Length: 398
Image (tube, rainbow, N blue to C red; front, side):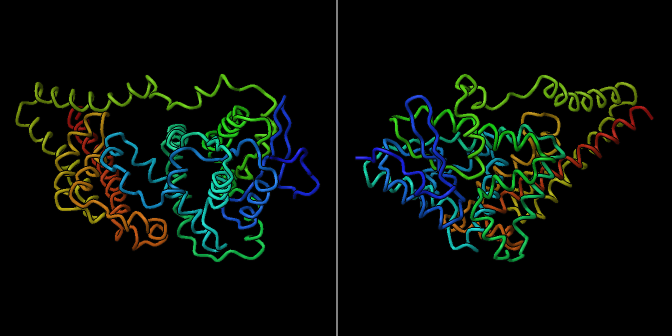
C-alpha cells in the first residue's frame, strides 16, 4: 500500500509534485549520469509505492538498457534499406557523448531510468514507457535541419567526442544536476532551434500527455531534468490531439522532390542535346567524363574509409547512376556492399561508445567504418555530381 500523503518537505528540490484532476504525480528530474539521481529514484519509489511508474524511455531504449547483449537484433541491412543509417549514427554519437561523461562520474548513462524500472518490477508496480520512439525523434530532428546545419550538428557532436579535457569538480557537480543531452541541445538552441524544438519541446509535450494517460491516480514519473519545466507548464493543458502529428516523419515536400529530380533531368537533357547538336562522339566523351567524375571521387571515398575492395568497386559503378536519381544515394549503396562483405561483430557493437572517442577507433571498428564508408562515398559522389555537371553544362552552352 502507498502512503496516504506525499511528504513533500522530505524530498529534495528535484522532486516536483503536480496535481491534475484526480491524479497526483511525483515528477523526479534526474541527470542521466548521476548516482544521486539513482539513489533518489529508488528512495521515492520505495517510499511511495505508486500506482504506476512513468519513465522517460521508449520501447527501443528500454530494451537497449535491459537487454544489452542483443546487438544481434540490429539488422544493419534493413537500416540501410530504410535510409536510417544517419539516424543510427547520430543516436550512437549522442549515446557515446553521455557515456563519456558517465565514465568520469562513475555512472552509466540511463542508470536511474533502469533503476526505476527494476524497482517497479520488483514491487509489482506497473511501468509506463512515456517517451516518443527515439527513431522518430531523431528522424524528425534530422529532417527539420537544413543541409548546412546538419554539418554543424555533426561537427558539434564529433567535437564533443574528441574533447579530451577532464571536467572540473565544479562542472561535474553541475552536470549531476542536469539532463546532459538536454543541456547540450539548449547550448545549441540558438544555432539549431528546429533541432531543440524536436528533441526538447515536442518531447515535453509527448511526455506530459503520456504521463497523464498512465493508469492510476498516484504516479511517480522519472524524466531528465531538462524536461521538468516544460512538463510542469504543459501538464494542465490538453495537447492530446497533437500527439499524432508529432509522432510521424514529415514527408518530403513537393519542392524538394522537384529539386531532387531537376539535376538528373538537366544532366540527361544536356547529354541528349549535345548528342543532337554535336554528334554521338561528343556526347559519348561527355558521358565518359560524367562516369569518371562521379566514380573516381566516390571510389576514393571508399578507399579513404578503408572500405572492402568490392565496396570501392561498387562505389565507382554506383555513383554515376545514383547521381541521376534522388531515390537512393551512392553512400547507401556503398554501405550496403560494405555490410555484406565486412559485417561488424558483436564485440564491436559493444565497444562502439569507446571507439567513437578516438580517431583510430573509427577506422578499426567495423560498425564505425561502415559510417565512414557511407559519409565519404556520399561526399565523393556529391563532388563528382558538381564537377561532372559543370563540365557537361559548359560543353552544352560553350
